[in-house]
Length: 126
Image (cartoon, rainbow, N blue to C red; front, side):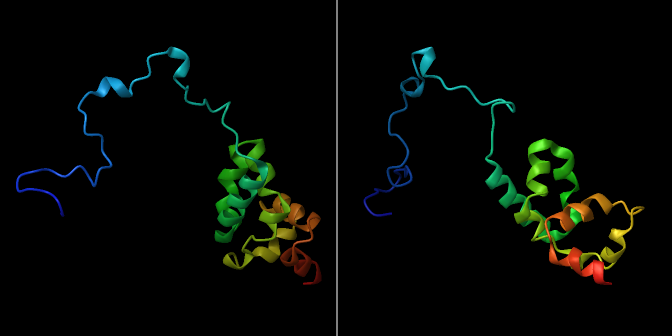
């Protein structure tokens, strides 16, 4: 590296602090310490969750099972118009059978039908 004499160690181009005094980085006042959010305090907006779930849905409806079980916010994201419109039904060649009430995917199929997803509308005509 430029400007380094032989035997001198680099501090990553001036990124690392040159002082070895680590106490200067510790906050002295307890109010200045931020607490890590607990799961109850952590919140992801519904639009962001729906976007993430829509990308997961590209792998098919089986990929959304854990999302449905994760809780009410994730379940709302799965059944959003954005997610249901991107579900890749082609990964399961038996998706036409989902319209039957005995199918384990029947509730999912009905939600897709409510949102007017084209794959489910196709099964009505088959």
